[in-house]
Length: 416
Image (cartoon, rainbow, N blue to C red; front, side, top):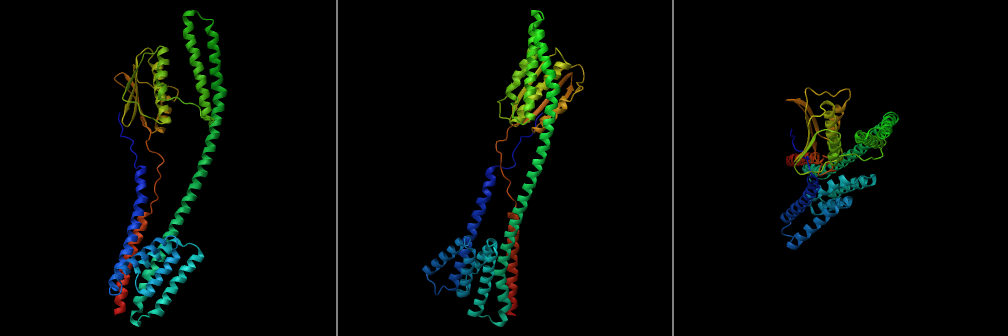
């Protein structure tokens, strides 16, 4: 009766590496922008710029890129001015145009970005007007280096805001559904608690009173047995009250694996021949699994005392690397049924709710009740990252492909 270990799909460390890799990728991309524009300037103006001039240009480019997150409109305008005046910095223009489209959300900011783009276009036409044959290439280049990154950044920003709004709306709807379901559950639990208190609670209290009265009237030889009967009835009343407190949401104490030896001792004192065995080093279980283990032993001993009185019973707790294996075995003459109640059915539901599984069968004259319960999870609360990197990467690839297709075609049209 073994199961595969409960292994988490991911850990907190796996999710922590995602943002760090994204930050590293942004830094590398910014460095590539600085290196590319610096190399283009050094190649085009090598006879004018000296080493200090190249270093100054690189420093200026790096400063503009560093400020593009905080001042997207200003850096976009600076990049446009640099392209118009010096005829270089096209890679920087791509970067700043994308940042402006992504980070500017207000109407005033959008108007400023559009005005800067149109002003840059007018300045380029006034400072260095293109030849008539190169106008198509000039228009395509302006679309590729200004309009396209602006639109891509704006699209991604709107997409992220839409996803965020949908996520907030979904969380609000889930909370409302959970509140409604919890209210219905609480109403049903209160009804069950009232019925149990009015029927079963009164009857158990009556059994306790009758046992106390019977203790003083029986011969001394039977007095100890009657005392144990009264104590068992009193414990049943206490446990019923604890269960009623749980149903009412009062956080009553529940029994777990630490109380298994206690219930074994109780059945042994009642005359049942119980042998307890333990194997392995005890490990941590969550509260639900621990309580389920206790209920498995309790139900197994109860069935043994009912269907096989006077026969030996073995209770085994085996701590394995992936969970706790609970086994209750007793010899019987035939198949053991659940009787008129639903003990084994309810026990199976309890074990499954705790993340384990239950098996019961009669083989070779023995009834065997086996439950496997998982250990407590070592890492909890890990948040699932929002899948958006693949969409962004695909959009970036499509944009780059469009740039490298449209721009050469526009140059060919201009040459023709």
